[in-house]
Image (cartoon, rainbow, N blue to C red):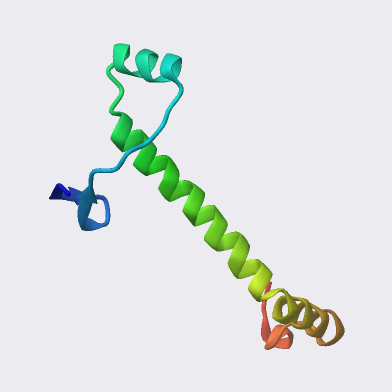
Length: 85
């Protein structure tokens, strides 16, 4: 297993070689265009994971969010009486 440390947007991250199956035509076109396939796959997977984590958080906290919104609808926002706008 090959590991290298590279500096990413969020600091140092370990990278690890992996096998990945891609459509032949897409892979060849990307290579012809000089696209860094590893970087694109890594960035896209990060974005997919971020969206899935957000979806899971909303799902896990749906009961609280519903209850909070009901409280705000019934009672208004805290300190609302002191706002000047």
